Length: 580
Image (cartoon, rainbow, N blue to C red):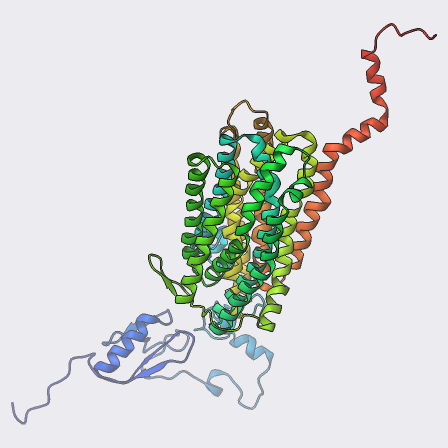
């Protein structure tokens, strides 16, 4: 009624400024009203604030109990916390260490509201602060951090699929040649393979420098320098591989004759090398394009292109080998044509930023620009040279190995070539893990996050070992059935040799997985010399000497021991011709 007493507001509806506690900072004071309620509610939902005896206001915010003090001590209504002399302190006495110890909470924190894991209270060394986020929680109970495992898988599996497709293509090539022509042709292709692989390793070395530079610049969003790195890599590939293609076209017979004296195997190998050498520059450009996409966090597009090229290669080989009857020449021609097509797709897609039927590319590289940029070329060479030399070590060791194996005949060479193709398929997970490690570690280094880069390196190594163990076990169980597919006759003499070599490969491929995954972070950081040295020592100081010892060293040692004379006494005739 008019003039009556004013209506009382409902309790709890008084609009006053409210303090909202935010984690890691000072309390915020929000204004009253609907805007303040919404702001306070949003802040409180994002950060529920401290725990303990609390009461909610009408707006939904949390605040301290009105009768409890700073540390939850119950006070009488209307009384303040004692301080100064009332609290037993002498204001004239200067504080000492005992005061600080007495005031420090029992939990060891400097502030009761600050959580133990907060960055401001982290007393660990700076190098270890945030080093392994998973160690404090669920990651301490798991082998691999979940987030990093997902990121690694997303980036690695397309590369693994690409590797399986490409190495399966190589294995299918050898299987088709073996079924259509015979194991002698398989030996000829095996003699030509190191030359193709050596030229391919040069392109791979340049591509190793490409992914290191691209991943770091992609992480730092320096796209202009990224384009310079790709153009300089393409220029180096062309300059280094075209002379090799010319030499293989002009002198194929002479190159194959260095490894064997079998005329039939030399003829097959020379035919294969002369034709397949034409595709070496295109294969190198494919590697540069693929590493550019992987370094830009798009391994899926690279998988589509290269795996599609491998499948096209298999289809072309089937037509050329069985349909047209071209044999070894058909296998080489299919390899060349597939590499030409994939190179063209990479060039168009990177230039336009997309390709019809595939979609958008993560980066767009202008073909018009600086190719021979001195600083970029120098960086690619300094990073890629050890990578290329490491790849060359892996390939060039096949030259003396094939020379040693040729002592035992074409069947032994064919068995070794078959086992090498199966080894290549088993080693394809390393393609994905190595490139994923290089890309993710490089991006973390580009963002100056060294702890995250180290964590990725450790997790990817564990991931690789587990994957290689599973693949090696499966191949060892079905070794006989797999090897038989590479010959026209299951009773061929090369079959048992290849089977035994496959068993040895199943053991060695696990250690190869560790080496490949560990080399990825080193490649991303530019520290590529140590992997090269380790590869060189393993191949030329261990593998080749042991192979030679088994082929010739034991026979020479047995001859020098003169025990063969004693053994011959058991087979000599009992009656010797009398002296005249």
